[in-house]
Amino acid sequence: MQQVNLSESRNSDNSPVRAWPKDDVSRVPYWLYVDRDLYDRELQAMFYGPTWNYVGCVDEVRQPGDYKSSWIGERSVIVTRDHDGALSVLENACSHRGTRVVWCAKGNGSRLTCPYHQWSFSLKGDLVGVPFKRGLKGEGGYPSDFDTVDHGIRKLKHVERGGLIWATFSEDPPDLETYFAEALPGLDRVFSRPTRVLGYQRQLLSCNWKLYIENLRDPYHATLLHTFYVTFGLLRAGNKFLLGTAAGGAHSVTVTENTGKKEKDSTGEIGRFGEGLTLADPTLVTPIPEFADGKVTGGTLHPSSVMHQQANSIAIRHLVPKGPGQTELIWTFFGYEGDTEEMTLRRRKQANLFGPAGLVSVDDTEVLKFVQATAESYQDHVGLVEFGGRDTADTSHMLSEGQIRAFYKYYRQVMQI
Ligand SMILES: [Fe+2]
Image (spheres, protein in one colour):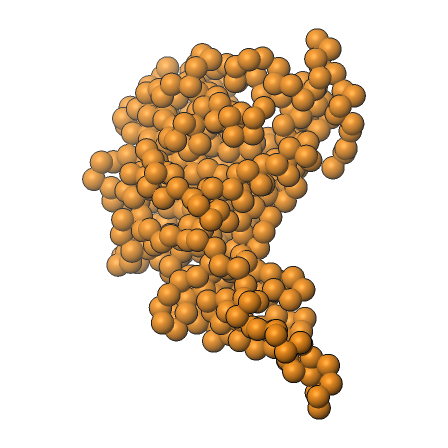
């Protein structure tokens, strides 16, 4: 990552680069995706602050003794299922010298043992074993007042809802219902039935985490960049939309209703629209009806999660920032308990639309890489976010960047920029 002395940099109007370029959110400065100090502040205020972060689901830790490693921001955490059935979310850091205790993605056992000095912990994070605690033959070891009770792994507050596990570093977080606010019904709609993990995709995005959040709040590009969507009828600009936000812009809610109409107006301006192309296997884009309302939904759940229900694909995307210019994206794909074999096959097939090589998602990965490259090399420039006006109101059409503006309205308040 290229570092510059931002305090000496100036915008073209000679204002300091760190200032917001205009007193509204129709412009987003590029240094926002590059600045290391700002990124560190975001981790503290957002990822490690009073926010709820997706860390996994109950299906991944279904059996007693199951554990998995996960992430909140750059911090590794562990999700465990104890033999009494209780879930815990722990810092993945040994209370002795800080080594990661769990190095694998998933496991099962009765103890978590740090490889460095073999301190071992219960699945609830309590310290239960310290080699040579009292030394050997009266020599060495810990002082007599050393008590294992004082040296457990820190436990995080967590909540399970609809099979998804949310955790926070905050000691005093808002309750989940208050936190997700208007975004909660959309999440409950999809995760109201017991789910099973169908698989994962993982990728490294060469961009700042906020650029990915913006991408999900940017319906303008959906029919223009993603020609696959439009060509094969998954999305049309003339569809019915609801673009909303929740909790003052922190989260976004997108609802799409396919009107089934192939409106000429909605494809007329799309230069690369491939009229007449067909798929050898149309089930790739044809959903088996499953939601009574016929809608598809998605949204960003601040700061690190995205939910999508698109055709028969249901997933949680987990954002793991890796510095200002890189973000890991972990896709967990779900089916419902009791799905037919046909439905499971359909869900798996439609997973090919998403992830690093996804027929749709690959487009985003490519363009975001070059937005980031531009941001790094033109830090005094700004992005234009004025499509659909300058306000942050909900809209019933997709021709607006209002959800992005709403995010930055919220962001500026939290980050005090
Ligand atoms: Fe996209």
